[in-house]
Image (tube, rainbow, N blue to C red):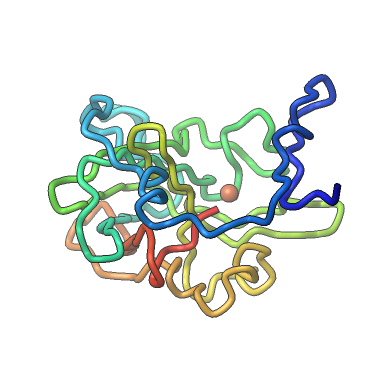
Length: 222
Ligand SMILES: [Fe+2]
C-alpha cells in the first residue's frame, strides 16, 4: 500500500514508526477538536520573581554582556480572547550568538552571567514581559555556511499542549536567507518584534511581540 503522510523516524530499535504512519488521506481537523492542541490550562507551575529577567542570574549578580532589551506582548486567540496564565518560556543566544548549551558548537564566547533562559506566566489580559540581552546571530551550519539571524525562541504552554515560535528583528543581518523566514514568506512580518522606546533606564529598547495562537492571522509556529 502506498504510504501517505510522513514516516515518524524515532530510532533504529523502535518498530512502531511504520505502524503509526497514516494509511489514509489526511483530513482537516474540525476547529472544536483542534482546540485540544491549544495551550489552555487552569493549573500552571509557580514562577519566582525575576525568572523573566535574563539580564542577571540573580539580583545581586553582575549584568550579562550586551544591550539589555525588553520584550513584551499579548497572547490572543483568533477572536481576540486573551490566553490567561499560560506558561511562556524564552531562550536566546548571548551577545555573541552563543547558547549556554553543551551541543552548541558555534565558535563564540560564553558569558558566565547569561543563561539565556527565562519564563513567566501571562496575566489576566494574556500579557507577558521579559528582559533579556539583545542576541547575536550565529553560524548554525558551518558545512553549508548557513547563518541564523538574531532571534528569540518562545514556547507557550498550557496543560500538555505547547506552541513554539521565534521572534525576529526587522532588517536584521541574515533575515533573508533564513530557512524559517523563507517558509513564512509574506507572513514574516507577523513574527517580527515591533520596536518601542522604554522609560526603563536599564533597558536600551523594547520589542512588542503579540502572538495569535490560531486563525488566519496566526503567528507562525514550528
Ligand atoms: Fe536559535
